Amino acid sequence: MSADLAPLLAVVGLRTHFFTRLGTVKAVDGVSLAVRRGEVLGLVGESGCGKTVTGFSIMGLVDPPGRVVAGRILFEGEDLAQLPEGRLRALRGERIAMIFQDPMMTLNPVLRIATQMIEAIRAHHPDVTIADARRRARDALSQTGIPAAEERLAAFPHQFSGGMRQRVAIAIALLNRPALLIADEPTTALDVTIQAQILYELQKLCRERGTALIWISHDLAVVGGIADTVAVMYAGRIVEQGPVDDVLGRPLHPYTRGLIGSVPSQNRRGEKLQQLPGMTPSPLKLPEGCSFRSRCPRADTRCMEMPELEAMLPGRLVRCVHPHLEARP
Image (cartoon, rainbow, N blue to C red; front, top):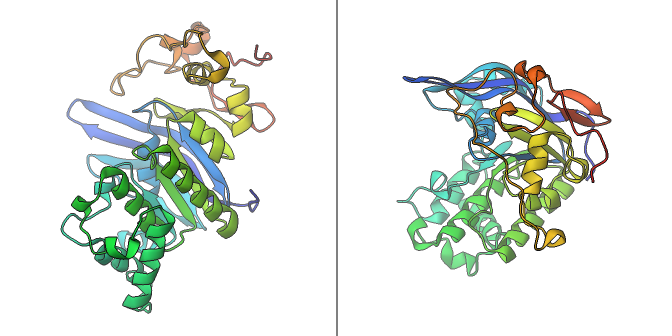
């Protein structure tokens, strides 16, 4: 996909902490990333690594006891971390939209689908008539694979299956054709045919309208098919970043290699899947230095200090003192 040289969104040194009675959880600890117009960035990692909190931080949706404590979130020249709530509300749903993993976070259970979709349009475009807004809502439902879209506009969320509710949530996010779309595992509850249709529509949106997309997922196969670049997160930090084909084809960080090795593949039928030893450390008790060192076969005393995210190969960033720079077998 073609993209402008200047990033539409640049996140610099983002830190989002949760201040609990048991201690401070550093859910996002110094994340920096950028996405350009028309580009798809995949954000991957195990559950609890900070992917979703990163998305919520960009949207300004982190609730107490969580708080963005440091960093800049630059979107079209504005620092979202410093904007008043009124300005953020104007941007959310119009210039920036998010598809949540749980569609019930998006849908109001006591309002009909038509009411919610029409309000989402007219909140940002009050000059649009109700009839035109309803037409746009119907077309958006059809694009996400909902049959009899005109009739389903009159339904309530509880009258849809979980997968259909997710499609409605996706349709609402796309209504105002945002410049930046953050998708938090939006196709998890969908069957493969609908998933393929949604992925096609999102890629078309990026290609034709220059929408930037951050795709949050643990599904490396989907990320490999949709993303241009990928950032791998572990324990609140990015440990590897680069073009998706390079990262998935020749991973440099031991954690990335472990993730890819644990995915079933037609090329390794009959082989035993690799496993990452140990468990993800508690966010309340992260080890000193590299957070992955207790699970890493290459760890030594040098790993007692936290490595920086450095360029190891052209276009590749890795946070590791023992990267796999040799050719992959």
